[in-house]
Amino acid sequence: MPRKLLLENINVPGIETFDTYRKHGGYASVEKALKTMTPDAVMEEVKTSGLRGRGGAGFPAGLKWSFLDRKSEKPRYLVCNADESEPGTFKDRYLMEKIPHLLIEGMITSSYALGARTSYIYIRGEYMYIVRILERAIGEAYAAGFLGQNILGTSYSLDVYVHPGAGAYICGEETALLESLEGKRGNPRLKPPFPAVAGLYAAPTVVNNVETITAVVPIINFGGDEYAQIGVGKSHGTKLISASGHINKPGVYEIELGLPVEEFIYSDEYCGGIWKGRKLKAVVAGGSSVPILPAHLILKTAKGEPRLMTYESLGEGGFVSGTMLGSGGFIVMDETACIVRNLWTFTRFYHHESCGQCSPCREGTGWMEKVLHRIEHGHGHMTDIDLLVDVAKKIEGNTICPLGDAAAWPVASAIRHFREEFEYHVKYPEKVTDPKHFEKEPFRAEKFEAVNNYPLSVNS
Amino acid sequence: MQFSDKTFALVQKIIKRYPEGKQKSALLPVLHLAQAEFDGWLSPEVMDYVAGLLMIKPIEVYEVASFYSMYNLNPVGKCLIEVCQTGPCWLRGSDDIVAHLESRLKIKVGETSPDGMFTLKTVECLGSCGTAPMLQCGSQYHENLTTDKVDAILEDLSVKNERTTYMK
Image (cartoon, rainbow over all chains, first blue to last red; front, top):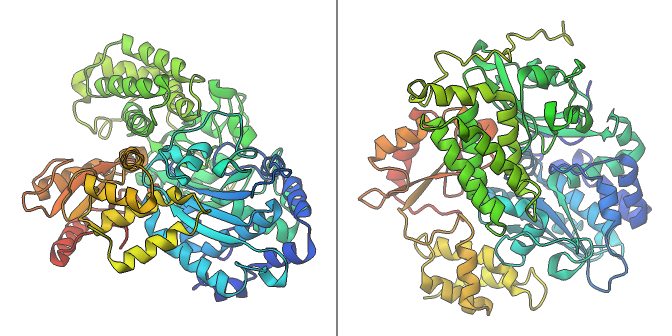
């Protein structure tokens, strides 16, 4: 049986309450860390575990912690990034809503390791109902002596607060998040200095994603070594995958890293195959920002090896034939999906969410949206396709934060893998006037084949 | 113009979450409270009042209020209906939901019904991709929408006849 480290107790009735959570082994990591370990020992376990940031970048979490300026006279902060806004990603919401104490426990253990006495959970404003769930859980943790002064009779004290944002994808970028937490517009900062040196209120700060912080709980409970044994290569532990789109069973799944992509899509344990008996056309594997891949490249690498759900395997082939694990936002498209229209919605999203500081992103995302709109609506020119590639190239790498790259990659990859479909929109405008133009008759390109009832070799 | 005693006490509590002198950090949460208490939008007067409470310049409030999509800088209907339309929701039929709402409410996206009851808005990804299509009204997420479900939601909102806010 694959191990579940985060979601094991998610369906236990009443798990959102302190008493039930505690009965199922909750807050053991706090007891273990505060009573038997030094803060540095906690950090060493996280380093040993090989845990990588679960928000999307995949940077080693223990290493990020080790950068924190411990010589500074200023207070240190842990800030939890719960601004989950990447299209296709809804795992943090699921965690916080169903098992809020897991996050609070992770916050306490992590704050102890970092020496933070005040920590904030920055949550996107649209999740306001979860703010109330978290505040209730925090209240229970204070009442039980796991937060506040002298936790469990030790000399360690901690306060945790929930801070709602107000609708801005960019605040998921850690320096924009800190600006927002300081009551300003969410404009990303120039780096260096990095938050580890000058973060919240110019004090040393670590910003970690919700899932990263919750993963600290099993790492301390079982030890970093045991956690590191799960997975393949440099992808250790379990990962939450948010599965959406044209599949039979959308939802949040905890997988052991290393699971074959094919099994994830077709097994009844996970996505349950493509809905309505249709064929798989394409997958965006790690949230809207990562390159889209056609069916044959998501199931197998260009070398013909089975593609695995790991940072390395999904990245195999670079951006020519690979993609990224990203945030684990797994968006599946069947044969009736229009790649151009889907891309147009993504680009509209990035245009809407660009903070406007850097010209290439502010202007470029707008132009890409406009050009895609006219191609999709049958008013495009053949030269528009290369124009899109050109604009994407001029955004990529030319902005102070990764939103520009995130906007450019989907455009570049969609044209790389589905160019014929863009050309079709330009050549036959009368065939794309109906917004659901591929619903009755899927688009067939010569260069790729949609995969029909792909044999599930793992189970058969 | 001023907050009710209850909200004012809550504002003071929120300010205390941040270090002394960093009360500006409370701006986003306090603007949410202001919008909920003062008719669902942030008028210049409301923003000036918040600036005074937090001892910051009015421009510091305006620039923030105009940056974040959840703050309304113009009046909205009693019930603000926000339909997600980004990729994953579109794949599951959000276009049909928007079209159905437009025909039922007899307004276009961005408009308010003549009786001031409903404002229809499309928004970008609300993190409900696995339960798409979806809409948000106040703090409530309505998910796995069908046109029948939308009808039931509209009926329910009409009967209740209350202003929806993110804080309820």
